[in-house]
Length: 416
Image (tube, rainbow, N blue to C red):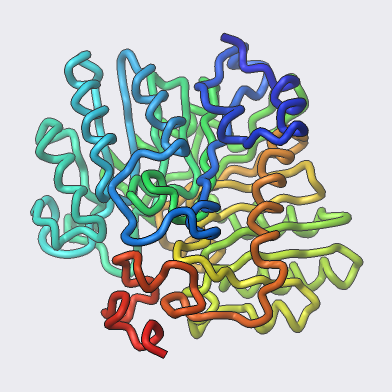
């Protein structure tokens, strides 16, 4: 079935969400048009109180892009993911792939213990160890240093999956109950049907899986970082840290902005980006930023500086995170990926960033979601603590939202 971009634009005007319109895996002329689907998490039931309480192990509509990609895979599935947490559906799909004799390989982040010591406590997302139980022993590779030790100070923070070296799924969503399953965190992911884009991602995956090269030890891509499509779309691919995505991609895009920049970002602490955004405002560009409450309270946060530069910053008051790493420039250029706009994301972690230029439809999709999120914060007067009575559902969700070791009613913010 051809992915009909024209119909998609019409339906969006009628008010149907991006997620519903773009639920299927795209097909079509893979080497000519930019064929894609956007999948956003619907946090609104949590924000308006329709959903309350502990965040469950679930399978939300935002997971359909990844689910369908997995089901369509016939030969291979390669994934570089931060980890897996409480996503039963994902493990079931994984078992289904093995029954079909699809070759499955994975690279994951490990942050403690000895490399390959598959104990839950050695992984930020403890259910990551289930991958090693389901797949062949040599099919799952933890990130590691050059001397074969667990890395400290850097993380394998990618969230991308390749199917049959044709489809690429990537974005800000971790494979977790808060990101994809119950759709508690605000996230965006994209599925692209493009063999040439898949080739670029495949080379990055091979460096980590076969060559055990991570972080600064990887080689820059030899596949070409700028991809052009016949519909006028240009896609720039950046892998941290070798490709220097902030200096080479993000800051130049900000410098090119003529009218407006909308940013939805978990962590924004990079001084170069802060300066570039201030310069944009000074030349008349309207800049809006939705920031996460945890990140805004961090000592390195740039929220105060950004506001002083004239940027309209709204700090979310949802129980879930503003977990996106996305931006929209002049309503036609889009940034999506796994990288927070920080020096660690740019210079040390394993990350991937896409800059999609000159595609009105992708921009409309992201812009519609951004405006929906922005509207929930329009009457918010003060920044709130991530776990407090003012942060919606955060005192009932079973999650340590502010990472202080206290959950829900045990947190002082929930007793004030």
